[in-house]
Image (cartoon, rainbow, N blue to C red; front, side, top):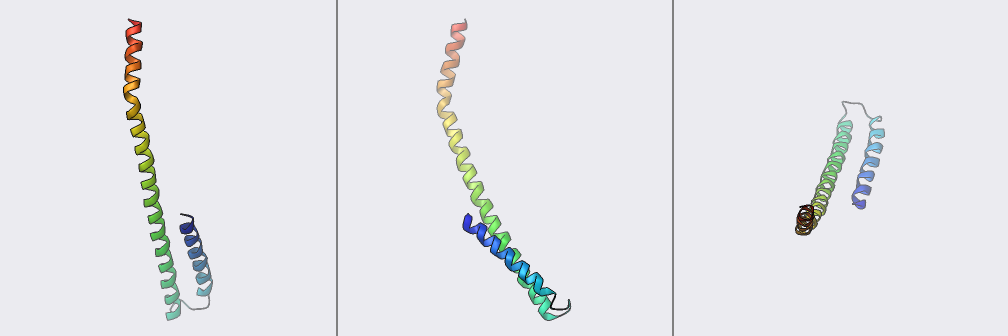
Length: 91
């Protein structure tokens, strides 16, 4: 995930440089449009990378949650037994 973070940071730095370069051209120029297309491509890369990170984190969260659920289910019989013992002792 850290490599993805660095990839996003590098893309943002490239975008900043390209945006600075936009001032060299007029809005109607072909070069201006070309730079805008490059910037859009970098935003697309950032979006794709962020989506992959989101998927990885979601999978990690699900696995962790599943482990906690399984642990709770494994402890359920003991908790029920203790509860029944407590209720019988109260009677």
